[in-house]
Amino acid sequence: MQASKLSITVVIPAYNAANTIVRAIQSCMAQTLQPLEIIVIDDGSKDNTLDIVKQLSPNIIIISLEGNKGPSAARNAGWDLAKGDIVSFLDSDDEWHPQKLEIIAGLFESNQSAVFIGHPYTLQANQTPYSVQPPLQSKSWLSILLRNPFQTSCISVRKNIPYRFDNNYRYCEDHELAVRIAHDKRCYYINYPLTILGRPQLSEGGASANLWKMRKGQLSIYAGITRYSIIYAVFLPALWLYSLSKHIIQWIRLKVF
Image (cartoon, rainbow, N blue to C red; front, side, top):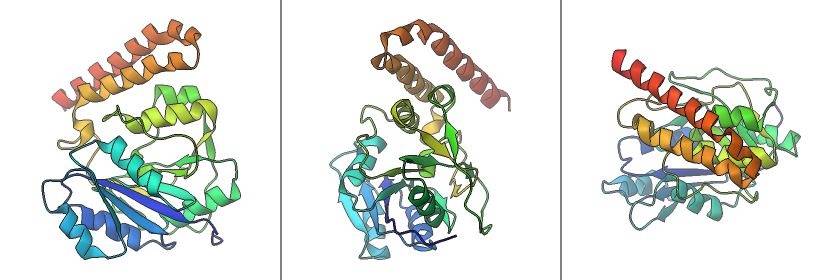
């Protein structure tokens, strides 16, 4: 793979992340393409997250928010400050494959129209070397609306696009952003698992552990599609029924298995 001329800013929101933040930041420092900068947003942590980050490297940019503003506001604070051509988001309990930024930068450079690229995650350590750039797969707005293929630690965007996370969302904020961007632009997907999650999506302790709050987030996303056209209101009952059906199935699986 050829070296890219594009620079990347890494944005890491952190809230009481003392037990995991070191692993996340070290995975950024171990990249084959070094980030232009790493921005950590301390979102009102009550533990020693901030002290740990300061000890790791004096070059890490730290933003401290007053109180707990939520993941959307924290990521937006880093996004606004970023100096890189590309912004890649990483949650404080996740980590990246060493070639993550090299692959992402190359894809953005060779595809000038791309503004949003995501990929899958894995729960296992992944050090598989990649020698070929993966093909970009375009995701339609409808497919993203029905099923979010993106997890926040798996998405990268061009810095200067006129979008931000919606600060009103503490759940499903990645899905809501992707839906908005996909309606106007193309969202792309590559089938390389370049993120290793610190915990399963529905495990106890993560934001996704609260199924009902997540479901309300998705229902709110569906309600919001009327901003594009009032005609979409016709489809809202079916979308809400679809979302609630998924919620019931997930709840049963968690209780039974």
